Length: 81
Image (cartoon, rainbow, N blue to C red; front, top):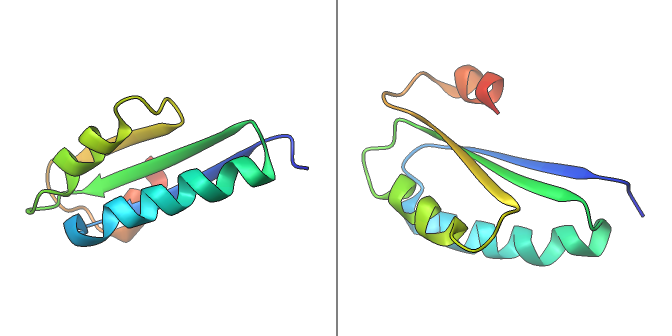
């Protein structure tokens, strides 16, 4: 078993996908290690991605998120993560 794990998901306009992604991550990560974090970087989404992430992360301290007010691109999301 790993001593720790960080799952990182850069996203842009993923409102329709983010819930399934986070639910899957919350099921898989604990199978690998007890010490894990799930990081979502919303890169300036114009849909409801960020509100969904905030809603879904409530009550799940393993989920962390960051937000770019405007789209800065994949590389910037990677750096933020």
